[in-house]
Image 1 (cartoon, rainbow, N blue to C red):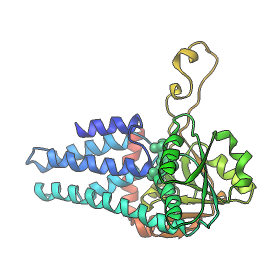
Image 2 (tube, rainbow, N blue to C red; image 1 turned 90 degrees about the horizontal axis):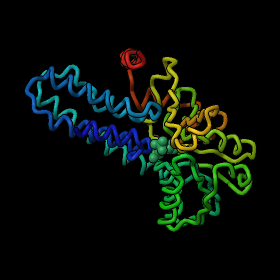
Image 3 (cartoon, rainbow, N blue to C red; image 1 turned 90 degrees about the vertical axis):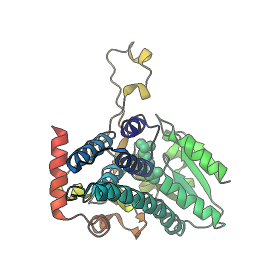
Image 4 (cartoon, rainbow, N blue to C red; image 1 turned 60 degrees about the vertical axis):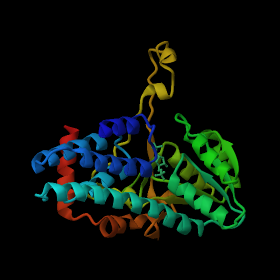
Length: 320
Ligand code: RI2
């Protein structure tokens, strides 16, 4: 029940933000494991795997979700004792949730060092990791000002300006298409990430690549704030990140769309910013140039090559 409910909330974006999605999925697996009233290890494993698949299938782009599920489920296959299996899931989930929160704290202090007193920062969408850097710089007493975009069609910008306002940070709210008009007033762009590929490309909310392109043209640095579990191991095997395309009704009401039979609404939720438009990725393990993404995948996510292949097979099954 908890798994179906959580999956539904992730799908309809009641629960959103790559980090929060990951923590909520881990929590749901933990609650599910605790409530599974069976003494049969085989059945327990199958139920857990089904729950994991349901959660992973909700939104295809944010890699934090399959990474979190992978971490929580690790070792379950080899476990033969039901109590240890249950305990293992619960402990791994709670460790993941805790380390995810700690990661945001570390990113905040590393990211804040890249913000100077007097800086004007532009952010796009609503990223907990990106906002933590901005809020930390403000907390340290740096006089900063922010430009925050609206983020059509789901208006996550409203959540961002509320948070900034509550922190007492001077904020300008602009429509997405006004970025280029203001980019020369901006010293630094800070955004979050839903996924970082092995070649350092950043997948983030639709419009991020336009923001980064404008920043690049204006010689404004672009900083990405991303926990290490947002790096995508399977991109090493050449797998591409699937860009979620969300319902047309988010962009145009059905009643209007019905009157326009020749019009198709396209609603991709994310886009890809190439590494050359990104100056730095701030992770809890340190700030790295995007070209070092491979090191994070190998050293911090610690996926062995067998796991890559297994994960790849699982994914191929999904695509069928
Ligand atoms: P944190 C969000 O996706 C945004 O694209 C945001 O930049 C990214 O997740 C990372 O957010 P959505 O769920 O994990 O709004 O930093 O589609 O909060």
